[in-house]
Image 1 (cartoon, rainbow, N blue to C red):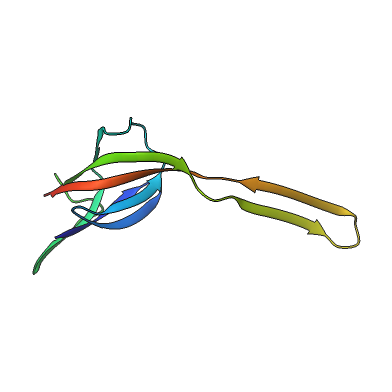
Image 2: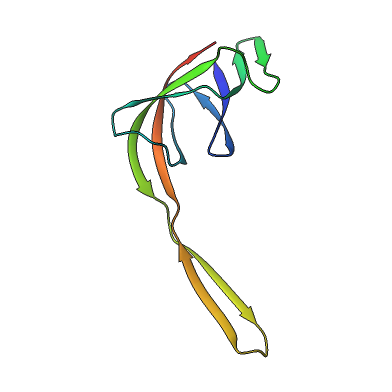
Length: 103
């Protein structure tokens, strides 16, 4: 059984017991987060596709940790104009473990 969920403006295909990193969520480490934006649920031969969401479907997950990703360097330059700009960015994330998928 798997589901496609939407969180942080991105879509993820998840199964029970899976760990994944998503955009930062509010919640302490060890707390339970319920994601109700479920786009698709597949259970064996049965597939339920939402329009746009599956009614009454929920995915519960446990917050494992919070962190920040690797640094991404942004470099801008205009040739022959003596313009150079360097900037760095680290995106915050939350690591969650999927507990249950319920339709």
